[in-house]
Image (cartoon, rainbow, N blue to C red; front, side, top):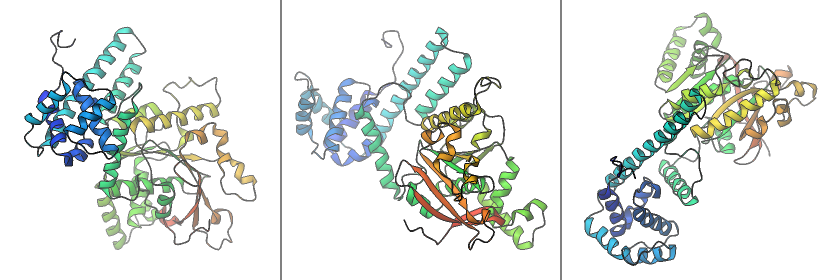
Length: 447
């Protein structure tokens, strides 16, 4: 229809045929092809059918050659007696070598991306023309669609499992190639990483504690560790502290310079050198800061979509956030309902951005009434659905905060209260209060 209306649909017959021909004459290139393409990237249905058949065979460890592919297409019900055999022979004739299959695959992917951009724009035009929502909602939808394309994902609609399998296979290939023992971003803390498998894409991770336990400090430690280890962009939204205060804490933690000295400027010569080295390290990272205390989840989401190579979002802290742009939109609701809505929006944001969202949260005073003041998951209940929305909930407890006679006042327990990726339990960190920083502790917990 598009071509009948005089508009050329972006696609390359030569590139699609060259990719398929390469797969048929040299199966050793299949791994490279499957990390770049999926069936939906092919414009012609016949090409999609052949690609999906080869992918199915590869997944099940079957030999791939023209004869076996032809036979498997019959099994899959996509064989056309009048054209398929001749078309496969033509594909091999047109592709003398598979040496350039990577370049062919890139052309096919680029053309598919252009088609998807056209589709996203047409859907946006249709919604705007039909008056389906306010201008801000239409703009937000357009941003989501374009961001999803940039991240090689699809927003909305049913997707065949076969297409998801290809995406999972691509992710597995990338993990294998990276050689990293963790599927997610590192927190920088050895035992915690081992227990929660790092910070994974799409996860809503909550760090909850009473005031004074070091929520902000451990959040900033994790953000800086992830930024240094991966080179990815880390977005930090602080609703409590200014950007200057955040960077001062970074300098203290990274340079091991007492925070009090940085606040007064009373530094020794050695501390000046350590602060300078820390400043250089922090400047080399892609950490972006926003200290606007009135930001909503939607505004954070929109700002994050514009960041390239986003790896992690950190928010300090949940109870200070606004649920919507309107100051009185929740006038008839309790704060508990508002915070519940916010937690749900943050889980949705994590899925849309396809990055972990690390959020800090205050605990209720319930633990203060107990003899054992370690945080429990039930201490979050006054905030509604937080414990349901969060994939991982971490509670902080330091005995030295409550007990002045504690044998090890700086030993901090990181209690994994909820973990969708594995077991719960506790790990230990050393609290360096002078530098507002945590470090791995040699102590282990006997499970």
